[in-house]
Amino acid sequence: MRGELKKWIRDIPDFPKKGILFRDISPALLDAGAFKDICDRLCENYREREFDKVAGIEARGFFFASILAYRLGKGLIPIRKPGKLPWKTISESYSLEYGEATLEMHRDAVSKGERVLIIDDLLATGGTAAAAAKLVEKLGGEVEEFGFVIELSALKGRDRIQDKPVFVLLQY
Image 1: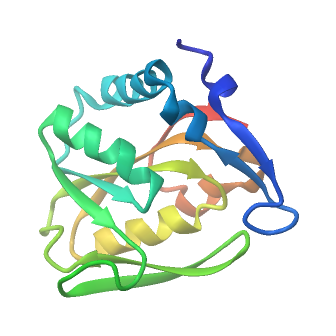
Image 2: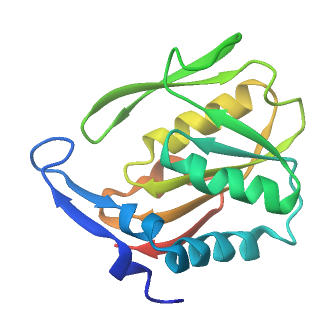
């Protein structure tokens, strides 16, 4: 299945707004082999790395972050949209290619000095990833690396997270 990931990504024009070409990973999630390949490739990349926790960004980042945390024996941090976490949170607002948004994380999710891997399905403008990193850093943690299934290179998301390592399975 390696090298064939692109065939499992569906293009959806004008979603969520007119002029946006959305790269949908749903077909890859629906196919057991494609989903397994994505998860195996992410786990292989991080198996020998030293870090403490895996943070998954809502919503599609949860799919991969939870599997990585389980397989690698790490704690899992959910980074969510406002009002979704039941306890005390910290928040970070940011801009994305089609508007503004905010992310939240529990105040006790990261301890000072912990190294955190941040996982999401897609790197576009980098706003979501940068906000997630700021949440980790506000609590004294360090971002070990960002991991993405897809990167939309033309949107230059790496520019917003340039001081951190990035691992990507598929670039457009």
